[in-house]
Length: 193
Image (cartoon, rainbow, N blue to C red; front, side, top):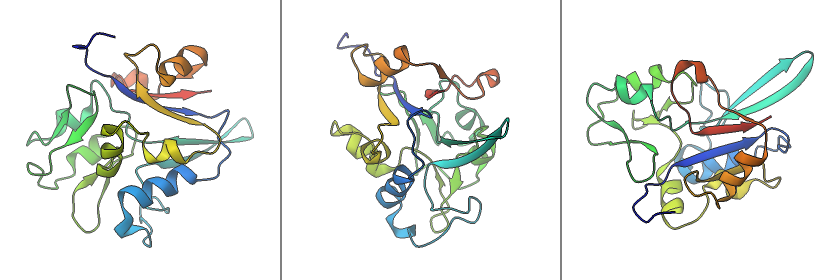
């Protein structure tokens, strides 16, 4: 990989390995919103986490899908923000929030077709994956909290532009889909099915 080439960070969720233990969701909430861990988010009926649990029943077979910010290359939240507070970091490809420019209008929350944005009940700021603590972990060369906590290795995170990275290998080796591709968002969240 060229030194000048930017990273393209992405998440992977493997439905074939997930054991439905909620370790990733608990780790996300405890790591990124420890001040809220005793509160239930009224919209999700779960811990205030950047991971949303979606239960499906396909052909009478219950299925679980865990979704979070897709870090889209064509992110609706960025296009919708009237103040330029949402942006895509050029060096990592991660969609981020500039809190100094945000007024809490929640246009980005409403624009997300994945329904994974939420408003912090105390600060009024829109929340999403990655939280600040996970950003610090990644900057230090570690995995985000959800990936580190998963006992079944159902999660991966890394640079898709690095063919030797674990996520690149898993995306190449497994049968993956990207959610709502027809919306043109170009998500960087891969689901192994």
